[in-house]
Length: 313
Image 1 (cartoon, rainbow, N blue to C red):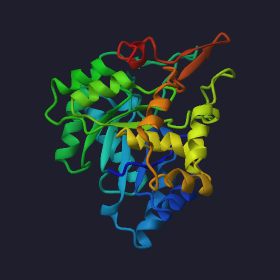
Image 2 (image 1 turned 180 degrees about the horizontal axis):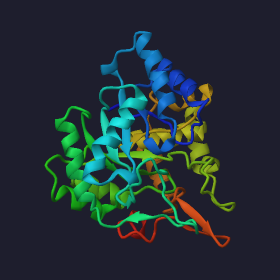
Image 3 (image 1 turned 120 degrees about the vertical axis):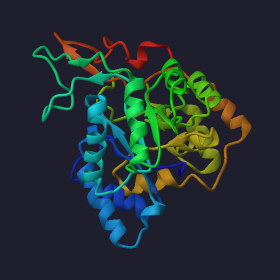
Image 4 (image 1 turned 45 degrees about the horizontal axis):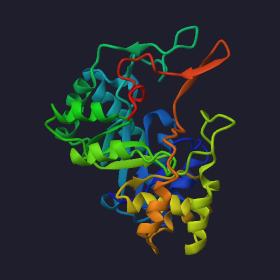
């Protein structure tokens, strides 16, 4: 699995095709996708164009994700097949359970089923372990090469490893210098599960951001280390992940930034640099889905018994 990939969350239709093509042209071979991003058909158009131009499928590493409304055993395969159809592929290299908590399945319904007041309609009966068992069947069916999890906290990781026939190949979580996930990283290491970092640059365009949220890329430590290497603070934040042994998927639709985000393999951070970056951790999570009810923003899924962020890590 390539250490640096292109994230596609928040990449709008009309923009993502060109972004994926620019990334592959620039050397990326890892593209991170998800059904809920709403742009997989256009990502598929880009993949088709690049494959027709001579890029070999076996040289690409494509990640897909099972959305929350397809957790029931009878819906898992259909959810995967929809992703494959949209991407124009016969298999994905890694398929993740996007979140441990489930939403109610509604045939031809919305991805996030809601009541009139805006609250989400949950599926409280389906356990993540049941969904995992169904995902294991996708490997046997040849629809996916490997399977993993996303947004699972430490207890939830251990609940899967305690029952699985196939160990998760990955846990994809938010991670950046202001949220280093050190405890979760250690637990996953003990379980033999690597991490992928999403929102590695602090997600400045995140729709859930608050006006007083910190700006990671303006951090003095990152900019000073960047000046030493002739690199941007974004490149330092990405290289920090690589030197931590964490896969990283920065998102951009700008060809220049896509190229810059990949230009991190000509230097390595020193132990002193790594220690300086470790000191800026704030345990600040930049990405938590919210809903606004009666003018008040609240975590969207905190009422679900399997909502992972109710646990400190």
